[in-house]
Every structure is written in structure tokens, then in C-alpha cells.
Image 1 (cartoon, rainbow, N blue to C red):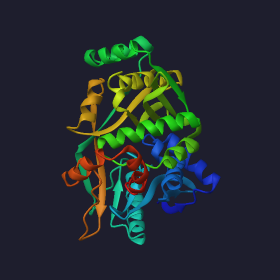
Image 2: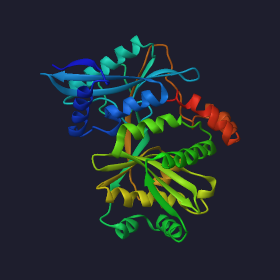
Image 3: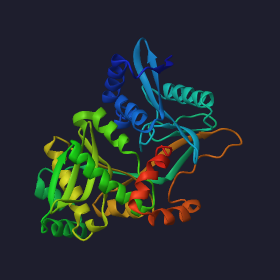
Length: 349
């Protein structure tokens, strides 16, 4: 029977063992990598707690956790923090359950009234609520060449990409200071326009530094002005555009359309075989946008557990309870939103 212990992520050998298990496990994701937990801790100041199951001296399962604290949204233990994936992965269902129970025990010690598992295997046993039919993931293989990639895109969306190709747009990729500054400026404006606070730039910097060659930024500009930009993760031959957005001017120049098509081509040249468009809620604009690109939704199941008498966190900006706050945030001057937004967003997790 596998035993569960807390891992020291400061130890290079521990990180190497974790990453080796993530690499060989079918459900191992970028969000299970030690670099993700460390980046979140460094970038947002939220403590990382990483549980490792071992059997016979070998890793048999993993559960990355972030203890998220916010004066506005309360406390929660999240797997994985600031991610759309994570959750327990293990050699067998019994070890998954042991990891989940150990996580719940840890949540109690940390005074976190809820534990959120965003992916991985769903634990069994009483106390767990499994949410289904809310989110879907979108992924598909990349095509063999540039023209084939374009032809995979449904006709109406393909026409938008062709329009973008007719404009004088420049595409750059990298992870240097100029790339980071352009991305943050574009992303901050994008999320302000959507009515949500922007994450601290330190989070993006920490992810880029921690992932090294497995993360980069692609930016679409016109006449030197960035219009759209995305920070992507590369893991097991799959690219995931994770933090991306566009300015208001991006729509006129179809810069977002160019961005995702250019990323598909860039990822294939990097050796990727698949494109993971991430998750979206059923019935949202983002859901429809991804379907328009020819991606088929795959329903996701998330597990959560909440202490008796407590209510789970509500951090979804689409919730009716935040409708007024979202509308007010959209009206904030960008400079003001960028100043106060990170203080709020680092507690969302």
C-alpha cells in the first residue's frame, strides 16, 4: 500500500522524481509539474503543498496543491492553483483516494474549508461532490503543414484567418523582456475589457522562468503596436495557449485569429503534434469561439469537498452575484485596473 508524504519542492532530486512521474503518467499535465507549483508560489505568494504517494521507494501518485487565501474570496486548497488542470494522478484508484484524503486532512490543518480538484482522477468515497456538464475541454491534432492546418479550420473561421493574412501583421515569439512587456500590456487590457482583474505580472514571469523552453509568448503587432498576445505552455508534444487576449483594436485587424493560427504553425515547427485550447464553460462565448475553430468539446468532471456547514468558494466571474462588479470593472481606467487588479487576482487561484 502506498504511503503519502509532503514533498519538499526546494529539493532538486524531489522535483526530478515528480517530473519523471508526470512525464510517464497518461494524465500527467503541465500543471502537475513542480515548476507550476513553484511559479504560483513565487508569483502570487500563495503557499505550495505537494503530496507524493510512494510504494517500495518509488513514486506511485501525485497531488499538487496551493493554499489560496483571499480577504475577498476566503480560503481554499486547490489542485492545481491558478490552473485548469491538476488533481490526483496515481498508479491505481486506491492511491488516488489516499492522496485525496490526505489533501482533505491538509485542508483542515490549513483552515481551508474546501478542497478543489481541477482534473486528474475523481476520488471515490463520501464527501466528494463531482461537477459534470459545466466545463468542456477542447483539443485536436495539428495538421501536417501550413495549408492543411488552414483547411482544417471550418469555412467561416478560415475566412477570418485569410482576412488577417491580408493585413500587414507581424508575428513574433520569445520570452525576453520585450515579449513579456507586450504580453502583459495586451493581456491586462483584454481582461479589464472583460470585467476581471489581471493577475500579477510576477506570475507570468515565474511561469516563463520556471518552464524555460517549455513556455513562450507569441505576439501579433501592426506598425509596432501589439494587438494580441498569448503565453503558451508546451508539454508532451502538446501546446496550450493559456493566457491570451487582444486589445480593442485587435478585432478590426483580426489579430486574435492570426494569433491562434500562427501559434498552431509555430507549435508544429517546435515538434508539437496537438493543440489544447483549454477549457470553457458550456454556453459561453469562449465555448462557441473554440467550436468555430473546429474543436469538439469533451465534457470535464471536477471533484470538490467542503466542510460541513460551509459554502464552497464562488470565484466565477460569470456568476450573477458578480454582474455589477464586472460591469463596474469594465469602466475602470486601465491604469487603475492594472494597479489594484493584481492584489485581487492573486487571491483567486
